[in-house]
Image 1: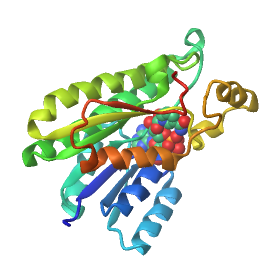
Image 2 (image 1 turned 180 degrees about the vertical axis):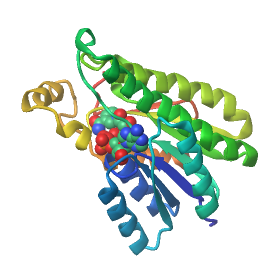
Image 3 (image 1 turned 135 degrees about the horizontal axis):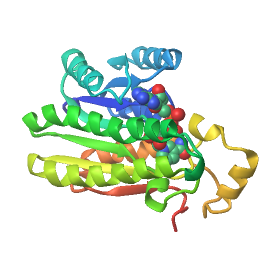
Length: 246
Ligand code: NAD
């Protein structure tokens, strides 16, 4: 079987992005990890991948900067070869009710989560269209599907990602390129580690499966969507949420 190519993963140093990097490496991809600040986490992941014989690069950038994203994509293609999968996982929260939200908290979340995902999708799409091959996977959230009080900025960004992903699926399908979103519920990562015990209990009460998910469970769905097993799936929003939206 031929090598599956290179997987580019924004937010790949931690949480869901990190789990996706490890899972896609298991499937034989070379791995390009983009991250914002946690150099130590990125270096540790690169070491682990290196030691298991996976070709990998790490690249520090702010996904909100479109030129920085284009530079990362160019470097990845130059050093590792054609990007066949792009996973846009970088994301942040700045939770506050809308009445109390600062302009800065609104803007930072939109810049990173919505603009950042758009920059990654656009930059990766160019070489994919030229080759008429590739697939894009974006990270939305149940907050983007349902709207979540205290997360107006985050919910708006994650709903925007669904619209963007579906538009991309329609635009790029004729080039043989698929675009899908995953919409996780509550997943055990640094992002949810900040919740108070009370917030966790209240959330868990709404999850039919009665627990938070793991980053590995989301990564499994990402690996499926990246693979030929999902060859006829595009424009989908795959909820991985223990049933929280039911
Ligand atoms: P995390 O906080 O553990 O990791 C976030 C990653 O994004 C890190 O690698 C960080 O370096 C990177 N990042 C943040 N801002 C960046 C920027 N401006 N430029 C480049 N990289 C940046 O988060 P996570 O829990 O793994 O979440 C991953 C994605 O999944 C996010 O988009 C998040 O919104 C989404 N999501 C998470 C959950 C959850 O419960 N954890 C639920 C639904 C959706």
